Amino acid sequence: MDLKHHFLIAMPNQMGSYFGETITYVCEHNEDGAMGLMINRPMELTLAELVARTGLGGAAELASVPVLEGGPVSHEHGFVLHSDDGDFPASLSLGNGLKLTTAREVLEAICDNRGPYNYLIALGYAGWGPQQLEGELAQNAWLTCPANPEILFDVPYAERIDKAAKVLGIDIRLMSGQAGHA
Image (cartoon, rainbow, N blue to C red; front, side, top):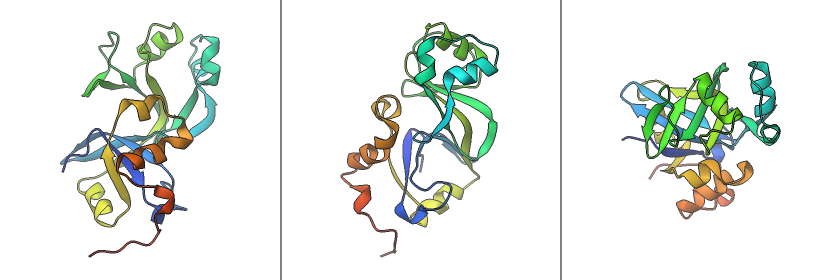
């Protein structure tokens, strides 16, 4: 099972846990584990405030762009998930038209309005060890569906879970927090 380029939608049985009511984009999934970014939990920190802390100047429109809480691991590290437009050699190509980076050059380009034009900024990430995510899936902790750029970059944060669940034909609000195995 390869869940790279998929969304993990927290099942209702996770309500009250760290991942309750979250949707996570899986950046990497292999035999060593998985890494992803939560994409629906904006922080009270804006991108303008973040770039000011790093000594960069920023465009005024960055004041309305929230930084996301990416996950419980390494809150002090920033990640930029972005479209593959522009020439950013330090960005890791994820495929499917997406790249991931921790490089300052991408923040500088965003501040200078040189792209990338679709991006999200997160502090921290979600990580799973070998077979850990598979175990959580077997315990009905997550729904999965293929990721798409519209949900990543265009859908309002509060609507991302519902929009992804609808890809599966599910209204997540009607699901029970109880799960079983047949």
